[in-house]
Length: 203
Image (cartoon, rainbow, N blue to C red; front, side, top):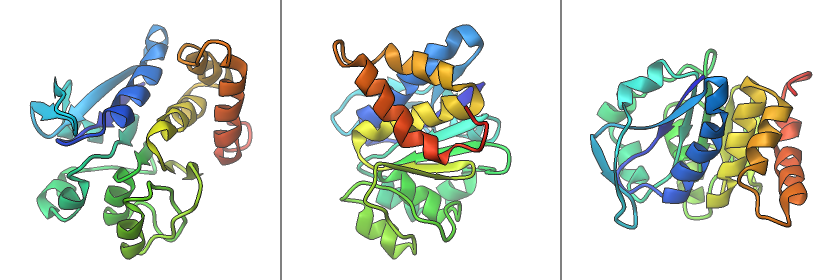
C-alpha cells in the first residue's frame, strides 16, 4: 500500500507526522506513507522545514490519501489551479482529511450531503461550504473519512489500516505509539471510535 500524506506550506506538524508515523509501522508488510506536497520544501506553522517525498501528482496513484490541516488551507481552498491538481477518486482510494483538510474535501465535492468532522476554527468555513459539521472526533462514509482535532490523527491512521489491512494490524500499529501504562485503554478507545464506520467484515 502507498499512502499520500498531503502536506501544504503552513502545515500542522501533528496532523501530518502522527498519521505518517503510525502508517509507516506497516513497512514490514509493504506499506509506505509519503509526505506529499506541491513544493519541494514546506514549512510548518511553527517553522519546521521538511522536504517532500512525493510530488502532488502522487495523490492520483496512491491507495489512500490523508489531508492534514494548516494555516493556509482557507487560501488554498479558493485556489482553482491547486484544486484541479488534486485528482482524487473515492471509488478507488481511501480519502481522509483532518481539521481544515475537511474544507478541501468539501470544495472538491467529496463530502456530498453527509456530515463531516473538523476543528472548531475551521467549522464556520466548512458549514459555509454547505457541509453539516458533527461534534465528534471522527466520521466516515464509504471511502471518505474526516476527523476533528489535532490528536484525532490516530483515528484516521487506524481507520486506514483497518480498511486496507486488518483489525490486528491496526491494533499492533497503535500499540507501538500508545503511552506506556495506558496501552490497552488507548488502543481500545481508538478502535471503538473507528469501528462503527467499517463495512461488515471490515475487521
